[in-house]
Image (cartoon, rainbow, N blue to C red; front, side, top):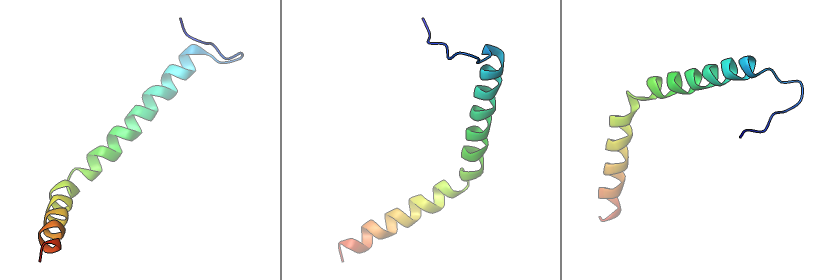
Length: 51
């Protein structure tokens, strides 16, 4: 059972949801190359805290 907001078309809300998921997926795709850089940055910071 889902709540319906008056005046909202189910097809339009479905399309908007798919577009939002697409935007989030694109942002994740663009940030993937930064994962190793951030891991190295965090690792260097943690190693330098002990010195």
